[in-house]
Amino acid sequence: MNMIIKSSNELRKNYNSIAEICRTTKTPVFLSSHNDSDGTVSMDLETYNRREENLTTAERFLVVEHSRLNGESGYTINEFKQNMKNAIKQGTVYVE
Image (cartoon, rainbow, N blue to C red; front, side, top):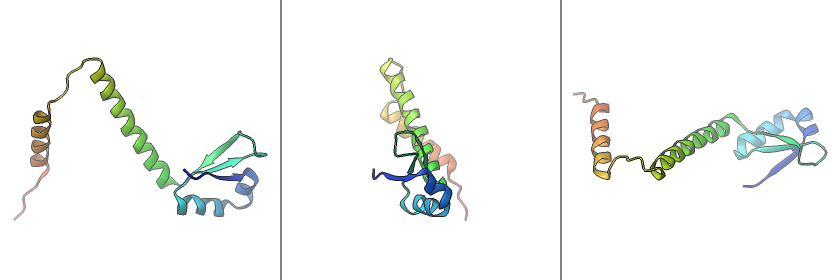
């Protein structure tokens, strides 16, 4: 990931330019005070929402994997396929 670093003063002076960088690059902007490791991160709302969705999905996968490693049984491939077919069938509305 390319790192974009700006001073915290830049945010106060040029909020619109920082917001534009976030929107156009879809990359977080690291705001640092006196070029040290203390600071904040700014990102546009679309990027933030996508990141949150990805983290939620990853958490779900981790829970399932943890259950699998602890010996909990899940669905077989054939059971999964049948469940998907049933879900698609139930979600399909036929209109003439």
